[in-house]
Image (cartoon, rainbow, N blue to C red):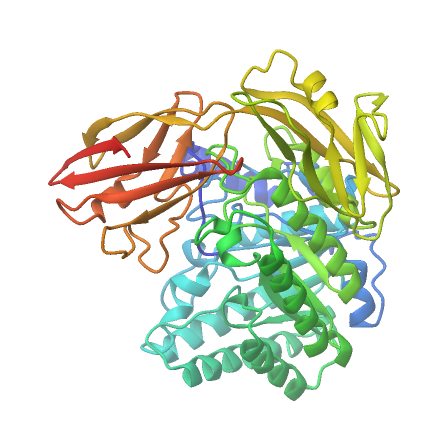
Length: 584
């Protein structure tokens, strides 16, 4: 990924002075617990990998499922610990292997450890550090994918205006990597370039440039000898895109190279409106599901059915989960997405690599930040789980309690019943099932909401014949109450009594019907970019980016949508740097 969304804290930008010297010595001597040992002739011994790699590329990539990314680490700029993940240890890879992953992608940005002019020499200490992590991973029983990462937009993207220097630097980089890792076992794969992109170029030129680089990468590695003559090599599409035109270009490159040890790679972050919650993409709906099914089917048909293994080098949702900001994707909807990815990967024969910049595995504690979320991801590797149309049932406090229904998504399972803790609810009395409609009776809901305090009053589990149970929160709510406010374009918040509601999205328009805000192609603005809920402090934040994009002196109509179905209309007017807001 290029768009790295960092969390709110940072460690130092790397060791300086004596600390840097000591770190270099530690890495070179292998004193941090690694396996980078020297042979009697002074060359480096290969990793003691225990991975038995099938001869067939298709079988080898299948054996790599599932995969995980060591994101925001060696790809961080300028140093390994610059983006908050500290110094990686062997225990990181042991944890990943113990929890069921079979491979790890190690993104590496070489630019800040390489001379920017010919001969583009990579710092020996940095290469040794990269090799140390590669060996730790293989010693933990993992396949490894090693690449050239953010260099893609730092200097490779300038190929149209600096062609010869870019090609020379790219070739030099890969000659050095190939030489350094030529004797590593075949459980190490090379990936030529991450999400390649080219500035100031036509579509035809971009295709030509990428083909040129990938052919050169292939030639350099294959001619470098050692295990590189038969090493699996991963080639990717422009931007890592799964668009059919880009996949067709990659297919042409791979078939022209006529090498049975090549792997196709694309990345997948779901249907964009759902992934970032923009343009009304608040649910993992039919459009989002179809987008995944179509993409995976096209990947399968373009590559897998033709004998070319497909490695989904990155997948996830953009900036979700982010435990340092309000969640832009509703939790249950996210679970549906991850469950679907796991199923589709098995259905279409695709190996998937979870992109993890910091969001899933806490690199300090080596514990999953959200064990329940990881449990859903892990379960999807082997089985399907049932879900429902939502993970909450809203019971308004201001009106009599009535029956409430959800639609069950069986996903090939059978419904077993509903539990509250260890107690099974009684079918017919507490709930009924008609077709795929699960309905809770007024009697059960009256018991579950208790004293009807706003918020979650009880949590139930719908259980199925396989997979994980689906949690259902019973929530007491009423329409939220917003109040008038004043502020500035740099700081404006709307006092909000949420009354048991979660904010889903914000619709922003002017009186003439045109869209208001920095995203002018849709009235539904992006969550956390234009607006953000602050539940602990009882406010809705309108961001400076949104406010500064408003027309001066012209009221904007904001409609806040909540997951309960409630909406509240509000008007905000910018006058210079002053902002005022009023309830409709």
